[in-house]
Amino acid sequence: MTSRTPHLNQPPHPVAREAWDVHRLPSAEGKTFLVTGGNAGIGYFVAEQLAGTGATVVLGSRDRTKAAAAAAGIRSRVPDARVRHVPLDLADLASLPATVEALALDRLDAVVHNAGVALDDPPRRETADGHELMFGTNHLGHFALTRWLAPLLAAAPAARVVTVGSFAAKSERLDLNDLQSRADDYRPKRTYGRSKLAQMSFGFDLDRRLRALGSTVRSLVAHPGGALDSLTPSRPPVHVRTSGERLRGLPAGLLIQGKDAGAWPVVRAVLDPRAEGGQLWGPRVFGLRGLPRAEPVAGQMADAALAARLWEASCELTGTDPEAGFR
Ligand SMILES: NC(=O)c1ccc[n+]([C@@H]2O[C@H](COP(=O)([O-])OP(=O)(O)OC[C@H]3O[C@@H](n4cnc5c(N)ncnc54)[C@H](OP(=O)(O)O)[C@@H]3O)[C@@H](O)[C@H]2O)c1
Image 1 (tube, protein in one colour):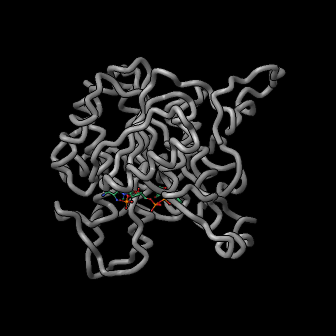
Image 2: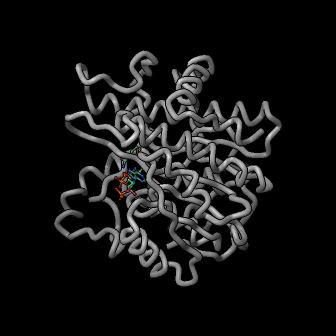
Image 3: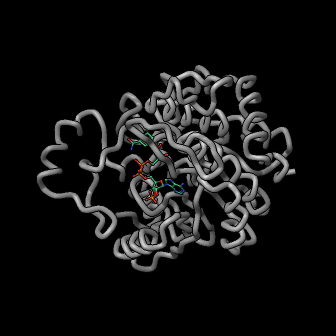
């Protein structure tokens, strides 16, 4: 459980970044964070851990009942948590301005672009807007949401956009000629990995653009490693793990982790004053499990020219440009 107890009596550490303690987070009282998909999985744990800092946490969720359950779960761990819900459907681009309106905020200190959909099997599906479901939700939804959140982020002294990527992106390559994964060659795992790569490329490109604009907002990318429900502690009523599931999950725990630990790199990217825009945060052990650390940004994730072309295509597909919101 997260604690509001400040770090007392700790000797100074020679490597500052090692001093981060995932169980003793710095206070963020007075700040407000939005977590997309905060009603379940990693997003729930990101919200729970952020709520423990004293910040106000808004759960962006398309399901009011699930959001209420998540808020109840968080309050059972953090009794004085400031947590609320805003309706959010990333697969419905036209609904996003109303979501931001419903936040009823003057400023936002961070948004965590966490919500995601991962289909394991065909058939190919589409959003209401006619975009392939994973690319449309994971990338285009967050791309457009950033546009509408931009004025709130710019109004905070040093806001952050934290995009949740995936190790699955590292072995994929974007195909700018087939961003929507044509039906005649549809491979769900490839489409998912590409949607995460698009998100990560966006996260790094956003940071370059914010700096060029002279904005105080920063964009960081984080990924959870491998995170399984069977390795995740129970959080009734959101998630209940049976003892059988826990036992069956034990071998996997050598390689990967629970969603509570998967949240750590994301939370660090939101809170750590030493984390910088343009960085990638992930788990320490083979990028799959363990404490959070900054990782090198390589391959297509680091390709600024490709990112610029993706940005242009995303503007066309969503009919909006996040950069315009920060000008
Ligand atoms: N778990 C892993 O091993 C892993 C590894 C790498 C990266 N990731 C990334 O981590 C993030 C969270 O993954 P997870 O494992 O926690 O997934 P999860 O348990 O399936 O949760 C996904 C969340 O996204 C929400 N969501 C889906 N479609 C949405 C939409 N159209 N509008 C708003 N919210 C929507 C879901 O809401 P509902 O409850 O309403 O469906 C849910 O809250 C994702 O971005 C995923 O790509 C996960």
